[in-house]
Length: 154
Image 1 (cartoon, helix red, strand yellow):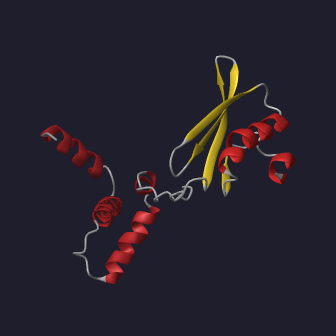
Image 2 (cartoon, one colour):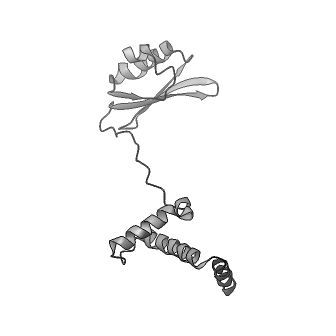
Image 3 (cartoon, one colour):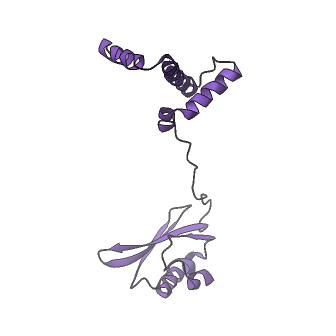
């Protein structure tokens, strides 16, 4: 920052009344103290005042660090055929049912003539369950071919 910037800041601050200047500087300093995790202020009342000022500061609220997002993940499979993910893909006009074991990443795919629930259930039975047995969990999107009474029954 050069001298010109300093002069602009001083001029802008001097346009405010003394109370406004103190409040503005207090908010700026308070935000810097809280954001840096400063432990040099040991007086609890001072920290409470700083926290109160920064809570009311528009700029502080706008640029506040966002809260950490919760970690959302599926539990990892530890053995073969524990969790099998599946989805339908359209490859060059041909519908393909793709199934992947989460533990080993073993992959199986087959073509299906249509997306009817009966067709999909038959393909899963023939291309996974007949060969490896029923997995503990199937993981799929909410497509109608996977979320239906016939699929849940079997």
